[in-house]
Length: 136
Figure 1 (spheres, rainbow, N blue to C red):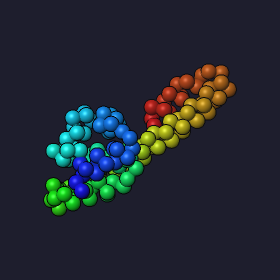
Figure 2 (figure 1 turned 90 degrees about the vertical axis):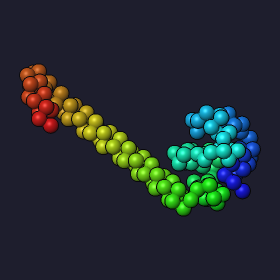
Figure 3 (figure 1 turned 45 degrees about the horizontal axis):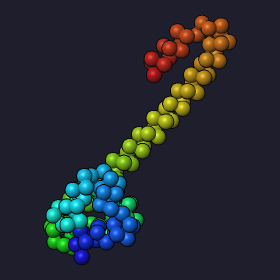
Figure 4 (figure 1 turned 90 degrees about the horizontal axis):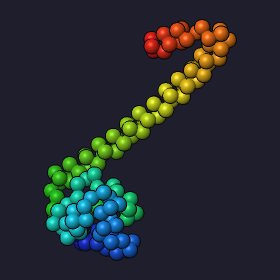
């Protein structure tokens, strides 16, 4: 079974139209139609959303690509490498978001503490606080 046939069967199992699937993975309907008719293979960036939509493992879709001999072993390796890169990029983005959230939290706490000190000093601590923040 080709990837296109698998996509067609999965789409029917989930009672979706080509338009529904195309919208879910953010491609034109004609692009998705080309995948289903085996005219073109999807880029690796679309394997994860397709797998999630159809509730199958990404490997199932990748093996269909390899199994139909449309992709050489080199192409399969490239797809797997690109997939791993996307996973690592997503993980780095999550890590960056976490660092930013922690920094915002610390700055908010520092700002809150400095505001209390400022109130106790009668408002004269603004210069000290801003110079501390500028120094880092």
